[in-house]
Image (cartoon, rainbow, N blue to C red; front, side, top):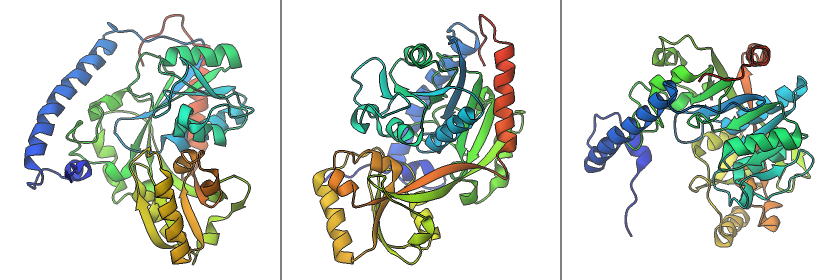
Length: 376
């Protein structure tokens, strides 16, 4: 069987070892060309040779500059709920990564009911639609068209663009960039040699930076060292467990009920260790922990193995993540056997300053909304 390249190991290597040297050399060469393309594209936008399109509403982008999970989905949900509580009519638009796009614009949820399954919508938009009430969720490859549909069909006055840091075609009033505290390093490399989608210097485009999972960071003091010259607001956040919910969403339990219980867990997400840590912190006895690739599509055989292990171990719970639950809609019998760990984002030490920043920026943008906008 052909051995797969361990990209995680290559990305985490600081360059002082010889692991995968041939692969690292090739990755460094490819990174040079990738960096050139990214820098040239950003230069075209910065010089307004390529121009951004202003939509007839306020726009907030939630994105990152690294591959892998930084917690965008909980951030989008938190933002949408906060905006609605403050009198806005938000809508969430996404490219719908991993979904089977059937139309140029796909309405995942009209705010009242979910209209598409995760296979078509993509697991993350489907998850967002599950969590948000009275807030439309739409996907589409052309986000300008998707945004216009949200405004015209649902009367949205503020759009939340999921994973849109690199999508510069749409002008945004607020550009939120999320950075995972666990992967912050002064030796970050550009893809494919490292995790960066674009150089750290492009953080200058951010309106604000949200450092996620700061409770899991070894050294949070290094954060400011990564962008000392930029006067950009920096907020810290944690991902905290909300509850565990039955796969059919008909029963909820407090996370504390996992304490001392035997658990079989599985996930197919970018940061499985974070999920396992949450279970361990809750006091669960993790008897088995199956890890699958990010955005993994489960087979009946894989789920049967997890079910049999659960029975053989005489465990109390099978637990997985919300994103995995979204991908199990075609297996209702198995889904109804398991519990889903629900995670929410919390700005620390208090959310007041973050909320005020968002609302003040939106108020200013609404008052000074020009006909022709300049890049952020």
